[in-house]
Length: 124
Image 1: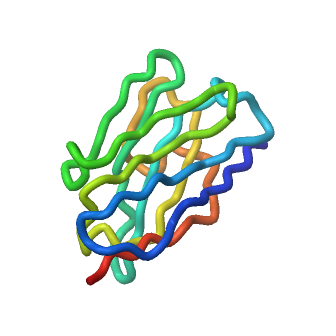
Image 2: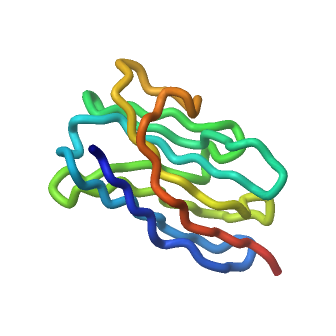
Image 3: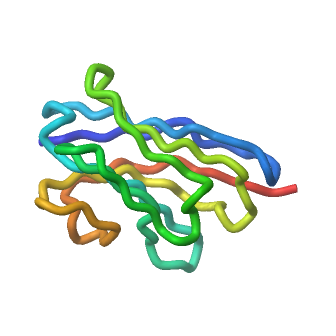
C-alpha cells in the first residue's frame, strides 16, 4: 500500500511562488508514476502535472505549463511541485497521486493512491 502526504500549501499573493512536497511511503518511489491534481470549489478535479518513474518524462496541463515544474527525489522518497507566478485561478486543494500505468497521464482514473491534499490560496 502506497501512502502519500502532501505539504507546502499556504496563502500567497499573485506572482508569488510555492513548492509543494509529497512524501511517499509503503513502496519505493520508483515503483510508481506520479501526478499532481487540483480541485477548486465547484470545479472538476484537474490534472496539472505528471512524471514517469522510468525516464523522468513529464507532461503539464495547459493552465500551468511554463509556470509549474514537477520533479522527484528517489533518495528522499519525495515528489515536488514548484509553482511560480501564481495566479488567483490557481487557488485550489492540491493532491498528489500515484499509479502503475505504463504511460503517464493527467486523467485521475490512471492513479490508485491519493494524498489528502494541501490548500493553496492565491489572493490580493
